[in-house]
Image (cartoon, rainbow, N blue to C red; front, side, top):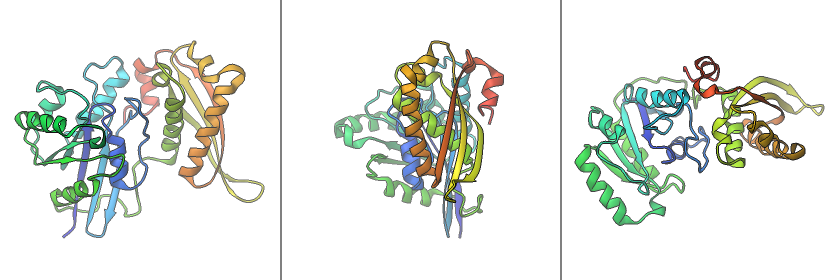
Length: 298
């Protein structure tokens, strides 16, 4: 018997959804930073063995009061995950406070597929706090299974994966066995660059940035090594943000380029020549045409 299904991971911003999916798949599919709203798109990670295939879905953190159309699009990815899940994972950060009238809690109450309530970051919180939250959630929703994990360290992840396998329905192979995701290298390169911006810059700037890969050319160095020539445009939403990104004498963007290129080379497994330009596109986060251009209609 072959089992397969779609396992969707939802939760609040910065609950650790991307870290968990990467741990479950065994590959780095989603970018990870300590800042909330790091994930902006719904990203698929595929785990295939002889007798099963699991299609994991990492979603943006649900924003109860969206300030931009971009955040509304991000919430739509979360809403769509309720429609196609065979197993739903609700990831909880016990350091946060939750309430029965939270929008996600209301949606989960109406789920008719196996629901796993997963408390993350166990290495950072007191057991009594987890126990209190568990009792509260049991009154609000009806999880099939409850787990405590640390996605960062791997604590409890294998047990969670085993339970997911058990809960999967019988089904076909949806993707080729060697396929890890439905996204292209071009997409992941843009995400790596955005990850480095999130890591390097502060306050509003990283959240006002979007990346567009203009060219991605496969070629070779003079020595015959494989080389990816990448040209990227970094869009900012206000004029004042461009000089911050570039830095005095270009120092900041030079540092950004060095760090991003190293990560891209690790990911692609070949040399990278990275060229970057900074452009201003005011209020792109509320512009439907630009959101579509950046892939938010997917």
